[in-house]
Length: 602
Image (cartoon, rainbow, N blue to C red; front, side, top):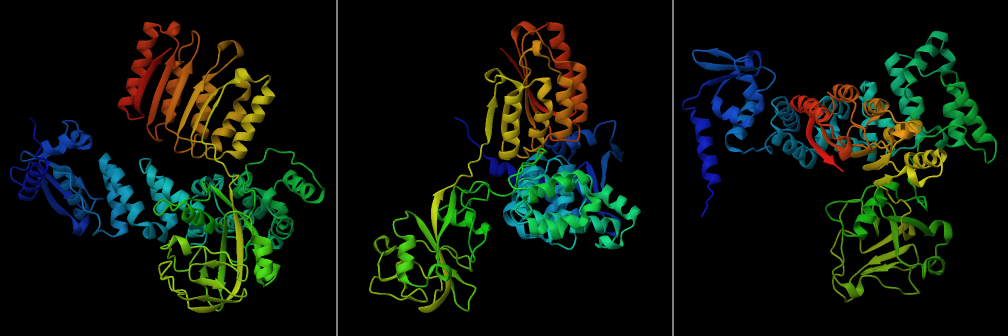
């Protein structure tokens, strides 16, 4: 029989930390007047942390009177005590810390390489400090960007900004955003903002960097050159072809002197010549791939994922713009199609699943699918939840539309059909709309495997790859065979798959020509930040070129550690080559560039 007394063990170690009995480590935490001396035990620190094992090694250790001396001026005494308490007894309490202190704690545990806390503190920030993360998005992004282990927080912040761009773009510090971060954002296909707004914010940022006025009539030749250089890296990221003709003429064309002339020519041709096709490879549109684009005067597109979540009763994890499974087709608008019940029934009867939204007059409150106070009301009496009466408009529970203007919310003897959420008993409606609910055309492909041997020619491969990077921005796993003459398309696919997590590359066969050196360079240059899982497949008698592989791993030093699998055909398993390969892998595993390695033999 085995028994576990983990709580008792944890309590004993906590007492040891608090009493400091037998300590042999003196930690000086904080800086200047805030320095505090903290005592600890080297054997516990070394047992729990690789960082301290290195710090207390003979090569690095500072000792005085038989005690290790450890100085950390950039970590406050309060935060160091929190970290030490976790090391000793596995307990941590974050709820009493301000958001800024939690972020400093995350930076500290990253520096000290306390891996369990890195994940835990990120999760806490995401779940409990969302408001703090939005207060200074520019500063927060820059901090996270500098720490490759903050992957969860990085993804959360980017997705939040893409869903609500005004958090960042409308902030006072937007113009202080570093160029690489702005570039990363503008590469995103899920940035929910009209393209003309993105263009205007880019100009605002650019002129702030150059300390110039946004007035083309006052620019001289040197000014134009300076602006061109500042904008050069961003121009290919703007989806100019998604900008409406009026906006293009008044808000883009006036800057023709700082834009590539061939781009201006193509855009003019695109807007003037009917049915003209673009002559260049376009980045995928940021517009959602909706069968029925939202047509509403009452709601905005960011309401639709919320409605879809309510439809499917997803109370905790809501849909977002990318995975919303429904389209909403406008069937009826009272101010447009007639303010009478006959018009309502003519447009809305026998249309399947629908949702209606009404705006109460002299109020910001919407009823039906969305309430301004964000209160949700699910049905309490199924038999009275939705009614159909030809003399009335929309009717649900106690809510009746009498003549499309006068509505009531009164108990008609059925009791409380829905929980109360503050709807008046009698009220007038300014306008209301009815939408048909359809399965969305916005299907997201997230995994794909491509074999070149099923295609007749290279043009087919190129067209497929181009279709993928233009229409499937949410790919998370790609398995493909590569030939040298499709590497350009492969790089574009890689650069546009910002959610990519895993990649399998097969060299297909040696007869058609393949150069892993070029592939490694592309991976280093264009891999999305999340990508860390690789499988390299070597067919026939090929072995990995160690020189090329070593160069790739060297260039990956500042990225997320790699989970690597190398698949070899049994006939290329030369023992001396395998030994050299394993020694190389072991070297980079020790350096932390490779997190895990697996060899697979066919």
